[in-house]
Amino acid sequence: MSESTTAARTDLPAKLADADQRYRDVEARIEEYGEETVEQVADAYRRAMDLLDRYEGQATGTGRENFQKFIQFQEKFATLVENLPDEMPERDAFETANDRFDKRRLNESDFEYARETLDSAGDIAGLLADREAALNEFREVRREIGHAIADLREEIAERERLVELGAADLDAPIEDIRDPIETYNAAVADAFAEFKSGGSARELLDFVAAVDDYPLVEFRDVPENLREYVQTREVGTEPVSDLLKYADYSNSKLDHYVEDPTELKRAVATNQTYLERLDADPLEIDWPPKPAADLRWRVEELVSVVARFADDEVVADLRSVQSVVRDESRFERLRTAAEAETELSDAERQKVASGEVESELSDLRDRKDRLEDARDEYPDR
Image 1 (tube, rainbow, N blue to C red):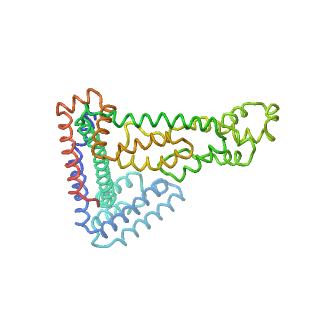
Image 2 (image 1 turned 30 degrees about the vertical axis):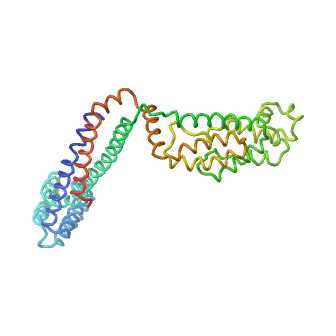
Image 3 (image 1 turned 180 degrees about the horizontal axis):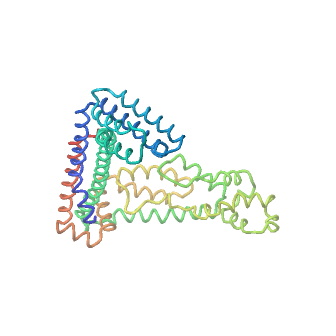
């Protein structure tokens, strides 16, 4: 994290307090006049400014038409002022502006004078917009604090993870769990490759489709047009490798192998990448492995899935993996050591050993606490 980002996060509680105070100040001024009164002033000011803007260019000329506009303006502005409540704040400003227009000819300076005279009413009229702006600013700072808290939680989780890995026993015999997993992975990869090359495309894709019933074994869905083709055409009884080979043939050559070359091209050639990439990866076990509880459920599903195409030896290799998960506490100790070996760099190990990570953790937690306290102190409006 950059120093500027850290400084910005540090300033957020004060920024929120300032935004809250600005909102309170505007709200206090509105309460001083009363919400309804401020709305009255705002309405009067808005209508007055509309008249000034609309008639300034028309009521300041010398022609007959300009004179008519001048009369209309005088009447409308005077009516506006006469209808204002007697007790309305800054009513005298409207009267002063109206008095300025009580003459036989107007010029631009009269309109400028009126606008300046009505500035005090404009200040009151602007309180509603000021309050909305202050409220938006307050909420934006609270959102910034929420984002900052989320970022800090991620950073804390990362440091806590470093501490956990740094405490791992790097001399632990991780081969006790690695060897069974690697043995199984190699065996299932070979078995699936043999199934793919030796079995029919129909059997292979039926297998992949059936695995949908096992959510922890995630093959990509078989494209519908491909599955329908191998299910309903004689060529579907041939291996995938033959179908891919046919897809590269010209239509004239393909005529000797299938009834409808175009149909094969449409079903197989368009899904060539899918067929080529279909391998045992969804059946293999990650290294480092998932936690014992997760792995136990996955292995149980894999036993049922792998037994559909592989021999008993591969299933036995999988049960060897299952056996090392039974002692959960030992498995987790070895798994953490494996993760530390895989994920921790030498520099990170040194940081953990020196206590630097713990110091960073303490600082991050303090920052998060301050932001959470500020957010609690100033709840959303």
